[in-house]
Length: 188
Image (cartoon, rainbow, N blue to C red):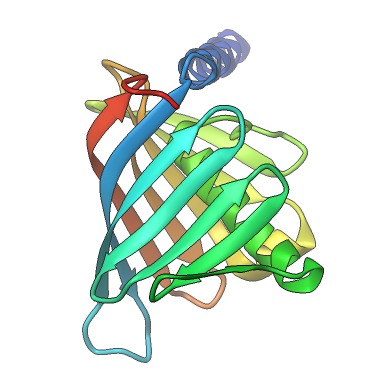
């Protein structure tokens, strides 16, 4: 009976991952606003940023902070650029690798595509009321140095990402909340 219960739960997790992956695969474009709150041990108060994100399948993304500062990451396939004060600068290979890792996490977070890569993460899906909560523990050493856990919240009604919580290896926590989402509207 215990084995049957464990098997049913694992099957349910696989079914939920399939639903979330299918929703991501059907996404051709997305735009939204976001708030990002970062809590760090060395700061008494969390820092809060706001911004805009847009994504076009398969690999174009703009992640732009609008407050309290202006900064954007622009991704077009393998090319990554940063924009500061209206000046766009393409990143070199070394900087590009660091930003590529960050943008892959951001893009996967926003779209859900390639999120459940079992070679990269141990994944545990839970029913969290109105959300599917996916706790993902990194397996790779370089990822473990940055994150102890990534937690994604997907709406149960639409299977679309709502919130991401990135727990840093040093205890820092970054929470990104997405809102005003427009899915598959006005795709470029």
